[in-house]
Length: 477
Ligand code: UDP
Image 1 (cartoon, rainbow, N blue to C red):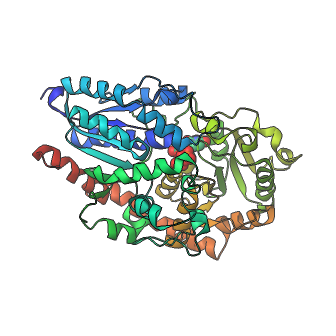
Image 2: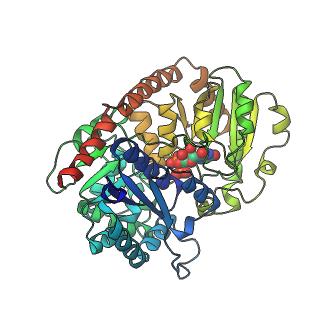
Image 3: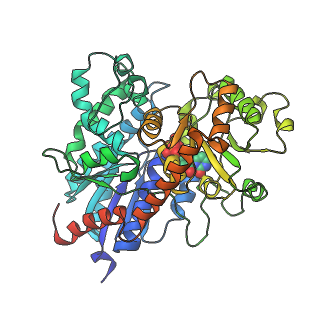
């Protein structure tokens, strides 16, 4: 049939590669398996070179565009990322409505999908009469369970989450200590808290909720959420959606220059199998100067090989600087302890700002991942069977670390205070230890098998997605 007859899905990704990448992957899968075309919409604030290069690399069945910029200059300096994203979205509704109206003229729009910070864009989809509105959760079921309960927790908890006497126990979830709950929920006086509750209260408007997780990583939460419940949209666990190699270029990197093979991969080629710990804190993560020094000394003391994506310390700029643009503002190398580079020359390799993470994780020399527990990093690690040391920084990373540790035992957490001796001990345990390290390595190998199985043609993720697409054909919600 003609392209206009093909089901067309519109996706809106709020700022952050962590939102854009999995949505793009979802679009790719819908295209490859179900003949669906898609328009991927992003915001003006993130129209960086990195993002443009990424969007340009998508297959022709996926069109992309940026919404026009909106004025955010009235928001005070230091406004939280979550507030910035929510405001940018709320102020973009008129522009988005126009875009959707145009798209509807030439396409059979079957669904509109956005992530949590884009909830207000449901209004634009309704304005235009798009039939189905889906919420996409780029993280996990634990996160979804928290968001579903947030409106009621907002009323029932009198103070701050961090002051709770007992860990928060949600159905099917690992109990999460209050201070490990999602960081934008930690200060009720901050507008980002209200925004979170606002979005959470709209989740029930979704016709379905799609989650980038898989059952084996949080089996009890999956059992709860797979049951239909009155007043709660059905939940589809469709992960792990991770960045896949672009067919035309064979390149996996999201950052330019994407044409030449990264030097760190050549270095990995020379290392023994499973001997290297990859150290990275995601697209926005950076450590305070003092912790960066302890980490350096800890890696050195561990006696293990390492590949470290070094960023300028966080006290040199704000997290959101990095969040919107992954390039370090200053040369990070100058913040390392004196003599560190010379002393570790034979066992360590440093990359400034950005590494082709998936290529690194899939390399046979990589045996461990010291990660901030961002959900994309976690999924990428699991699907490549790489056990993790958890060093969470912000957002939902602390609760991810608790769930991965106490729920399934896929990580070793670095106990506080994070001094060099402790860091060395944990890294060594992960790589060669016979206790917890061995258990984590076994668990992660099983999870890898499970994740891969779910992605095969009749696996759980593929089946969930097929079930959804079927509704579009027969015209159900
Ligand atoms: N990433 C990368 N190279 C880097 C740092 C990050 O390719 O040096 C990619 C990584 O593979 C993942 C994403 O950026 O896909 C980070 O997402 P995650 O959810 O782990 O963390 P966030 O950046 O949202 O904190």
